[in-house]
Length: 378
Image (cartoon, rainbow, N blue to C red; front, side):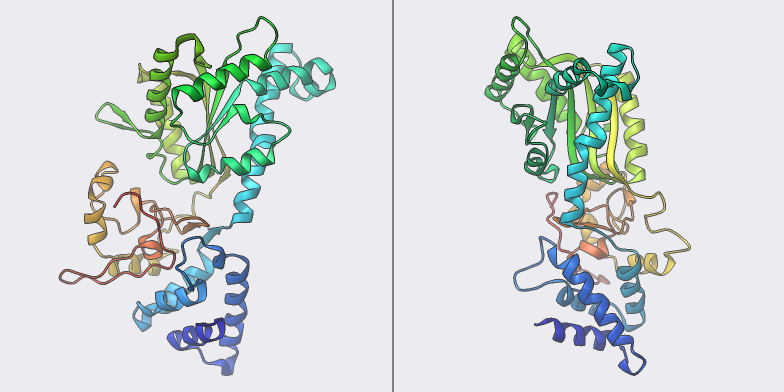
């Protein structure tokens, strides 16, 4: 199906009459958004792009509900494109890491942060502090390859690891390269660790406390650190009580609030933690009012209720119980987000965007996705 046929099908589905210019106006908007944004979505199926998928998605709704669904796509959908993600990655070191380095060096030298670059000593010390900083990707979405290229002259490849599951030999290699770059007779260690991920909507995937037991990506990383330090002893390259920096390229306000609370609890209560001080940052903090909410989104929330298929919850039940949910009408952790990332759609976004169900069972509607999601939970 070519674009023209797809657009005509959408016009038919929506009941647009071109006598008042509606179809022509919407065609222009759809072509523009498909070209500059939505056609780049990584998980569209072969031979099918945004306009064709939108037609199929709109058709699943009753005629009276299609205007609401289309208005949601036009006015509320937030799509983070590859170019926008690239800018967030490129801004990470100069806008997040570098100011922190200057603050550390300024405190050591007892000067103002803006004075650090005014002396050769300050500039040299900044580079030393940077070299003793380790960057760890927490998932494929951290795009460590892009981060490396964007900072080729600032950050050594020997202080960047693409995934948190680092084996013993890699730890030893990091330690050896760090010693080679240090001063003669020095045994330098990484003082700071940045854990980097692409997106967080609830914060609970990164860290959560279930009946006194810590879970999540930070718990996994903490266990890896504990095990490697015990095994490698002095060959382990990270200092005790290192400074932990948690950075997401994109974060919801709900996730930031949860992370602040949970990391604070972990700092007070988690006896087995390997890190000392903590700092949470993000490249883009989404607005607090971005999630669908009453009364602004009443019509779309009604569609989320009426077109919901509970087999989605049943398939993801174990995962949902961790967030104390009884349904998935508004996505994981009830985040109700209208967000799509170019490489996947978060399950925290409303399921009408991403869920695919066959409608089996009494009274259940099939759900067709607008953006297909790669689901690692079921």
